[in-house]
Length: 229
Image (spheres, rainbow, N blue to C red):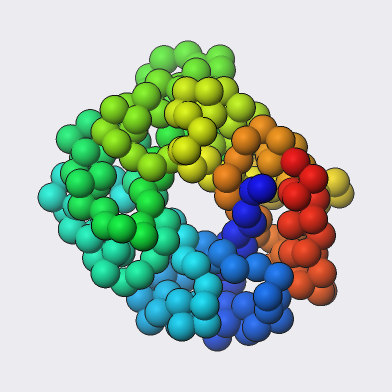
């Protein structure tokens, strides 16, 4: 059964912890991204861990191998459960990240952002891209060779990537939206049920929960729908 992580895309650590308190036992995973991490630092991660939550540190490291290895080691020391690196950092960087991880920390690779479509990604690689899923597959194979634990992907790519990466790989799927939820800046979205049936391991949902009048109820609804997969 797919797990659900709530992205803490809120203004402050105080707001984040208030949201976690309101959601209560309905969610155990929380994604901490670069905006809130820069604002609040590792203390917020420590507070989430102290409350018995699992932390997905989504900083998408992309740097020279030694720097990324140091960041991975620091994340392991902090106690987070999941962290991201950019697959476009190349084989040596990815291998350094895989070597630096410790028990309890999984490293997943980010290929094509779910906010990007083919034409936009084509401007990055300086060639026409009709199908971003093929680009994702190419980058995922780099991560597999380097020994990463899994990958971030859109739900539409999950079934194929499950075939490539195997049943033990973690597939983390952002862009989760229920029927009626706005897509916002995500271009490749899916419902919780669609993502779970496609083989996703962890579904990441943000505004549908963080912007809800009753975030606990919405979180439970998303979990129940994902359980149907």
